[in-house]
Length: 66
Image (cartoon, rainbow, N blue to C red):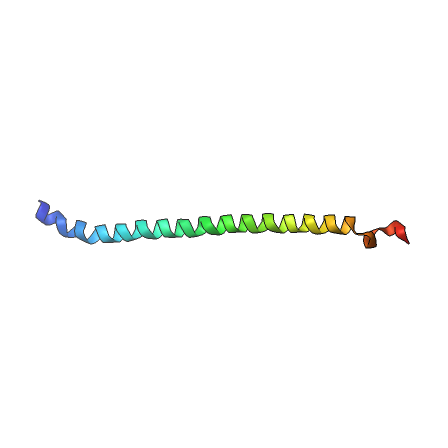
């Protein structure tokens, strides 16, 4: 019986192994991309807040100084 099943198992195991490896690699890539996008958006928000704070503190931006 094993002699009849072995060729099929031997043909499927490498394919399944590569499928698992590809899944792990792509999952890792997509997760890293998602985290990078979140970090980039947070950094841009922080930069916008800092620029707004600098503009508010700048005497040139005070509309009442005219």
